[in-house]
Every structure is written in structure tokens, then in C-alpha cells.
Amino acid sequence: MGPFAKPIICLLWLSDLPQANATKMKNKLFSFIFSVVFIVQLYAQSNSDTLLRDFSKPLIVIVLLIWLYSTTNLKGRFHKRIFTGLLFALAGDVLLMLEHNHAGMFIYGLTAFLICHIFYIRAFILDHKSNPDLKNPFFLWLAGALIIYCIGLFFYLQPFLGGMQFAVLTYAIIITIMAIMAINRYKKVNVFSYQLIIYGALFFLLSDSALALNKFAYKIPQGDVLIISTYMIAQYLIVYGTVERKLIITKTEV
Image 1 (cartoon, helix red, strand yellow):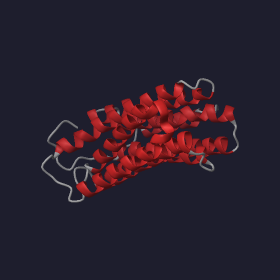
Image 2 (spheres, rainbow, N blue to C red):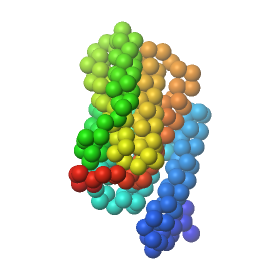
Image 3 (cartoon, one colour):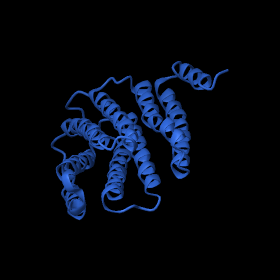
């Protein structure tokens, strides 16, 4: 029996279970597979194993794409937009891997992730539209804190950015909007999905902040490990939150 036979057999078996049970089992299965990829990637980064790192890094998003597709069948616009965002994240991962040999690839990777965040924003907007009259009492405070953080980080980095100022500013604005729209899902979806995605968005912000500091300002000790670990946690939480998402009031297409 080949190394991929058991997961395939498990997926076929899960397809015959009732919907709720099958989803729970798939979540456990893909969480386990993702944890293996997580450990392998951290090991490769910690030991500067370039071959293993380049092999395992695309698997981060590939596993999440398969999980999202197999669990939701991309039935709703929300699922489709998160799935499309993940495809651009996969492209961004590959492009940033190539940066070691081609420095110009960084801007292409940055652009791919910017598009990824735009699709995440478009997905989160759907939840806002499901019940636009509901207001989050903490929204302005939290959004304001994120905006202040974004502005402060950019002005700290500005002396180091050179010709990358516009690109970095644009990216910082988009990822901040993504986190703000994740906050705006408050009481429009079930609590579990809300918490998973908001934590995922904040981990994404942390990962990209560490990446910017590490690349432009100063080398963070074990910076590569910090960046990739927070990135993997972010994408995992966003996908898990997407799989678990349930609208409280539906005033738009799911």
C-alpha cells in the first residue's frame, strides 16, 4: 500500500458518512495531515534544509485547498472566494521560494498575496451583507487599533524601504482591511468560525509584520521560523473557520 493510499481510503470512507460526522472526521484528518506538514516545514527552516523546505512549503496551501474543497464542495460564494485566495497564496509561496535565486520575484510574490487578501476581504464582506444592520460595539476601537498599528509599522519601516515604499504601503493597507473585515463578522456568523478567522487574520498580520521587519529593517533571530510558523497557523485557522462557518441571519447568498 503506497504512502497516499490510507488518506485516500479514509476520504472514500468519509464520503459515506452522514454530513456532520463526515465533516468532523475530515477536519480531524486534514488537521493531522497539516500538522505533519507544519512540523516538516519548521524542521526544514530550523535546519536550513533547502530541498525539504522547498518540497514541503507548497504542501501548506495544497493540503488546505484539498480540505476546503472536499468539505464544502465550494457550494457558496464565501467558499469559492477563500479557495481562490488560497490559490494566489500558493502562487505567492512559490514565487517567494524563487526569490533566493531571483531577487525580483519578491514583488511578484507580494502581489500574489495582495490578491489573496483581496479575495479574503470579498469573502468577509459577504458575512457583513448577511446582516448589515447589526453593529459591533467594539468595531471602531479594534479597527482604530489596527490602523494605528499599520501606520506606525509603515513609518518605522519607511527609511529602509527605498523604492518599495508604495508597494509595502499598499500591501499594509490591504492586509489591515482584511483584518478589519474579519472583525466585522461579529455576531453575523457562529462564534467558533468568527474566532478562528479573526485569530487567523491577526496571525497573518503578525507573520507579514515579521517578514517586513526581517527583510527591510533588521534580521530577527530565528526570523524565518517565526514567519513561516505564524503564516501556517494563519492559513489553517482561516480555512478551519471557513469550513465551520454558519450564517446567523441570511440576507444574501451563502
